[in-house]
Length: 201
Image (cartoon, rainbow, N blue to C red; front, side):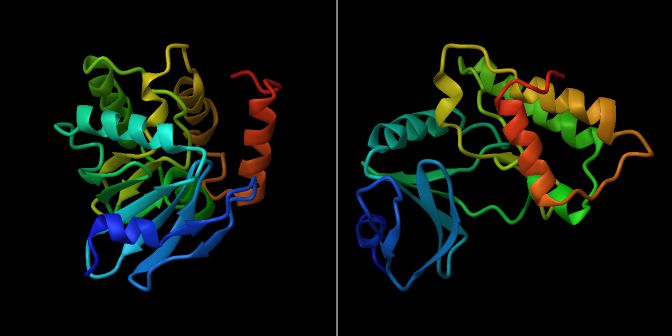
């Protein structure tokens, strides 16, 4: 198998605002695209390769530093390698909170407490967990919590997203009458309204 640097170099991304994926090695399977990177499964391994967009090289450096800081905390992926535009971390088998909601997979009070604990452990390492949302928290196939996309854990300003998500869990989701399966377009609409600060919780 090619080394990680060669695998990352095989990923060709257009250098425009669309960041279209042009090419990648046959041993990589695309599994996601975020605001700053593409993520691939590396064939025949339990690892994921995250290749950052051309204008997100600094984000790659910052995220690698943060993953190194939380390496002793089981709630975050292991960092196996990092280059100027890529990271290699654990491939997480499970569902994001977003997927749990769209699929009707229950999210429990224990899950919420575990996420709280994971974020508190990061704070004890001098970090400021930020930009916590439904797509960067996983409930693994073993029912454990894993948190990814930690690049904004060093920002200085306060972030209320997790506080607000937790409040929504207790105010709405935890109630017996509240639906436990919600279409993705509704969740996306709620997120858009929330970002405009029209939905205080």
